[in-house]
Length: 415
Image (cartoon, rainbow, N blue to C red):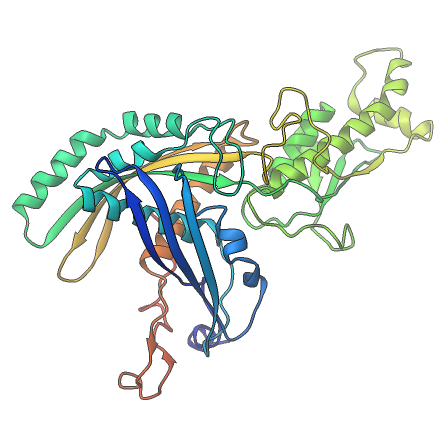
């Protein structure tokens, strides 16, 4: 399709509206939130029909321990193209909603927004709205770390001084925490085979979409088998591998594939061990060991799937059953922006991001994922709004989609 026809005929990330009442005390401690959620689905359904109240309750509490909730919601059927999921489809709007509530409370009680946020933060052992017990909560650690790194108080004072001197350019600094309820890391099979020349081939059920899943699987297999990573390759993803595998989503596919790959490699290592033990040299080169296995008819192909029960002692969740997720991810960000109040032009002057990645499978890749997620969030909130000509006065046709080109619709692509 031509780009304009594409944007006219297809939907976007799904818009949300939340009408609410909030109760709090003079310090900004929130006691209750009651509200109705509306999400604009469009003229037809896709996977987005799973993202109503049954899903957004995972995120709408954010990082805040609010004792009382009353929620209702509606999936809105309209005459616009069907909207769909994109990165963080449940968590981004849910987080945005609760952060707007926090800002409204701060304004109402005349307390700094960051103080209201800190007052309401979850603590280790608290239970989230979705029933997840936050036994490993690092929200406060992430908050304290970004606060110490970003020189927050000095920059707030500098922004206030800048605003006093400038009538049309205004600056602001915000400090916001984040919480992500992880999907279950299950039903992502992997198949590992060791070829006669010592090369290792991985076939897995995840899709490489720029998140480095192949690299992580290769590194995992190389580490588990004790071989040079240059000997390991991933083949293209195919439904022939596992037609019933889960879709690539939820920030869990990479680690799930690596978990299944580990199980494959552990099985292969068990088969190789008797052959290796009988070799004249205990430290025989890898290719010699493989050749000996082939000579003795050892099967060097393994198919395994991590199902959530094969837990390594000492590694979360380590037998815990704390709610709908195997574990929870935490982070915090401090962002300084400048806005032209005449044109609305917005600049991000500085951002400091802290993300607790646990045992990162590849820190270089994960840093890129954190930065990319932040930029995609900027697009969602700043430049990706669909605008409709309801009267027809602008475009000459009632209901035309006005944001149908790169001038009006700009996905974020760089900092």
